[in-house]
Amino acid sequence: MVVGSNPSLPAMNSKRLGNIGEAKALAKFVDLQVPVYLPFGDVEKSDLIAEFNGKLNRIQVKTCEKFESGSFTVSLKSSTIRKQVDYYHTYTSDEVDYFVIYNIESDILLLVPINKLEGRTSLKVNIPFIETHNQYEPFNYEDYTFENIIQREETEE
Image 1 (tube, rainbow, N blue to C red):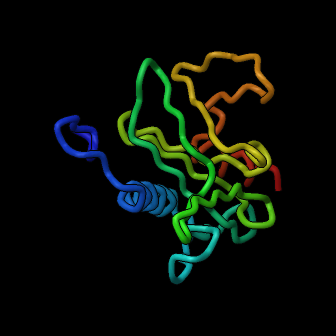
Image 2: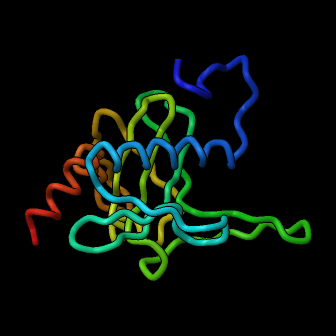
């Protein structure tokens, strides 16, 4: 059983979900022998810094639990509450270079350049890939495995 997938347990809070996703991303980078650095504190826009493609890349990790009917949807924004008011933030290429997308129930881990998702507040991933006709270009999750992105970019240098 995947952590957090037991329906008899209460839903995890966003901090715990984020910790699971960050740990999974960190382990994947280490497995691929990619140097990883951790920003200090919890106020930075990036969760990890990973060195590949000849540079340091700012990584924002987004994690979701549910995998239903062959798909999952992950939020790409951050939210905070100040003075009982919800504030939402959408990431830009000035803040991060990549999103790591992790779905707990399916154990799918993706590495997506910000330019593929900039301006979006969420991403729906269909397994297997189903081409959709909406305002966004089709998103084939198989194009965004860690191995494909890092290998592709290292060969483009």
